Structure formats: C-alpha cells, structure tokens
Length: 304
Image (tube, rainbow, N blue to C red):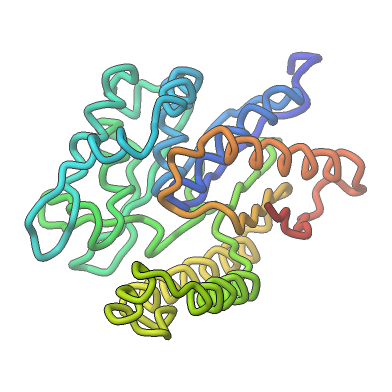
C-alpha cells in the first residue's frame, strides 16, 4: 500500500435525488484525506454519482452541475403525456453522456454496481455488467416521475424502493473499509413546524393572490395526495436504510440530514456538495480517532 494511502474504501452511495449531490463532497473529502476508493456501489442518485466517478469524470460532472438552474432543469425535462410518468428521462442522460462515456461496466477501472427494482416481480435488480448508462437510467427511475425502463421481461424503477443504500452489493477486497454515505434522513418535526408556520403566515397575508389561493387550495395542504405519498415514501426508504446499515455495520457511516434541500434542488449543487464534504470530514475525524477502528460509527445528523 502507498504510504499516502490510509486504506482502500468500498464506497456505497444512497438514493436521495438532488440531495445525493452530497456524495460528490463525500468522495472528494475521502480522497483528500488519503483514502483510496477501490470499489463503488450506488442506488438512484448514488448510482449516477458512483458511475460518473468510476468513469473518471466526477470533476467534469461537478462543473456541469454549476450550470444547472431552474430554466435548464426545465429544458432537460422531456415531459410526456403518460399515465405512469411525467418525464421520459432520456434528455438528461443524453446531456451527461456528452462528457461521460457510456462504456461497459466491466471496463471501468474499479468495480461498480447499481441497483434498480423490477416492478413486475417486486425484486431488487443488480447491475454489475453491461452498459453503464443502462444501469444508471434504470436505477434513477423515480416512480411516477421518470418513465420506467423496459428490459427483457422486467419493468425497472428506482432502486431505492428495494435497497436504498446497497451496502451488501459493493465489491469487497481484503482489508478494505466499508463506507456508506446516506442522505435519506429528514427532520420531520422541523419540517412539520415550518409547514405550519408558512400556513399561518399565508393566513395573515390578505393580498388578492392569497385570497384566490385560499379558494383553490385547502388549509390542510400538508395532507394532500402528493405530500402524503411523498412523506410515506421517504419514511419507508429511511427505515430500509437504517435496517441495511444495522445489518452490514459499515466501519464509517456518513449520515447526512438536510432540512433545507429537497430531492429536486439540483440548482443548489455547490451548497449541497459542501454539506457532504463537511459531514464526511467530521465522520473521518471521528473514525480516525476511535479505538478500535473496526467499530461501527453513527453520528448525530448534521443539520443545514
């Protein structure tokens, strides 16, 4: 082992939409602190970031993300009139493929795998061979948002449904360190309080616009169709993540809680990346000072 290498890392990146941009900060911090990523696995946004990193294009991806604003997000959304999805999801993949090569997973310099879910069979599907962007596209297929991927006899959707942090799927090497980066945590109490504060403020605003909205939108908007489904899904994913982490017991677990950023805040990439970098730095410091180093560490969530 190189003297500057503090250890080989089997890195696992969770699902989380735009919040998964924190994975970029985590990777950069691990490397700057002397760790060598020897294998990588991911789910949904974690599969995308992990695949881009494995292809050696993480720097280019970060620079490209700096150009993303609300207008460009709209331009990259190939909307579809369909009963099972809103966006086809091809345009965003094509844009990334302009600077990230679509090569066979077997030809990547480090072992890589992505996780998706077969909607028909209700089972996890692991991609560790075949075209890189076939795996990524299947893994990021957020149910009812992106168009599901038809492959063989399967209908593939987001891997977060079955395995949101695939610690059991990453390729392991003798003496490596299992590291998980999980961005699935939410502060539900704070979100609830903020929602009620906004509702109260809206009631005090008697502008014409607000009066019209009051007629169109019920007071208990927090219980509408979309918010109930979204909250149910995030709770399920979070609980599945915790169970996987307890089962696999990674040596380092970067557990990131972000109250300020949501799954579609892609225009805030640098701020989210900074959260990932800061939390990973804290986790590495605690890991390096702990005895024994094989113990499983879970830390108090970092709030932004």
